[in-house]
Length: 235
Image (cartoon, rainbow, N blue to C red; front, side, top):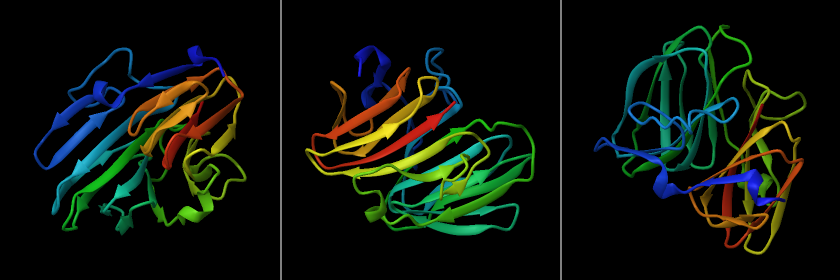
């Protein structure tokens, strides 16, 4: 795999905002952070790396026309929305909110420890539609040594549904082992190790770095140390 197909966005270069209760890092332009070179990656619009203090969180606020996927890295997040949905999603599990034509929601860390999440926004294939929410546990054993779809709008995937021809996948890889993923050169991949360091081809990607990849039909990821990976595959 040629190195010019990969752009690594080091954790230390990401946009940053410290609100006291929220320590946020932005892989793409978000809120007060704007980088014209990092607005989106295909349909992937937002990847925020958030640490939320105990007993705090995001108060009710609206969204529309966005697929919002929350991957919980540590702790748990509690969701409530204007549709009457409520749920608690724990570390390693995933929730999806299709904002559709409009929904108001809150996300709180009601735990006694900090909660760490990746919040991923994907632009839907079409605007509008009825909003919805869902959550699901994904045993880590099922993604040991392979990429497992966690949220997907691609037919045949056993995952939480999203309204985009895209996937959010997870994998755990032991040090020295390699996991592969088949794609197509027109797709936009974005890989972030939640923990651990890996090599994608000859390029090293460390914990919480982002690797933007396109123009390839296959990636191979080799763990330098035990790693937990999250991958988005989008148009």
